[in-house]
Amino acid sequence: MNGISIRTERLLLRRWSDADLPALAALNQDSAVMEFIGPTLNEAESQAMIDRAERSWKELGYGRFAVEVVETRELIGFIGLAQCKFESHFTPAVEIGWRLAHKFWNLGYATEGSSAVMDWASANLRLNEVVAFTSISNIRSRRVMEKIGMDRNISDDFIHPNLGPSDPLRQCVLYKRQLAL
Image (cartoon, rainbow, N blue to C red):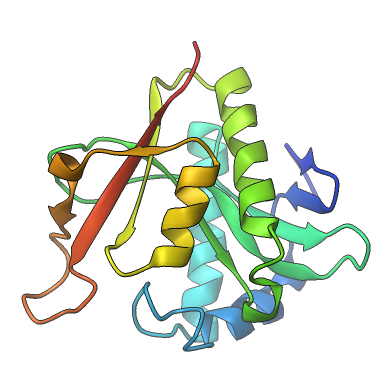
């Protein structure tokens, strides 16, 4: 495994390996995990996610980390950075995001890992700010955004341009955090 990794008290955030696909595919097929993201993904779509993350690391020097619990070495999901791939009033932008297997929710892992990624980004990348967004009804992710020092200005909330008029996930909240340069 090449490249950057981050170790926290309980987590290892690292680059992806071929062995990660089954666990990622399983969490992407869990409707509870995907409730505020969109349709579940099959194994090929999960492999494409890994490929995009690795391409981002090679091209941009950042991406989405595979996340495992140090004690068990179990892959529990991903946390990391990506470029926003749509047009909106706040793009171009770099987004922090996370997706963890359902059985690992409410243990503080999303906050712990995301805080570490924000610290790493502040120390290693020349970014002015990082954004995060989600459906207005995704209270769990909104709490993580607040816990990692992100702020919401209600005037920045937006309608996601890639979602249709009847999609319940279309109304999004936007959070931002300035990074020290």
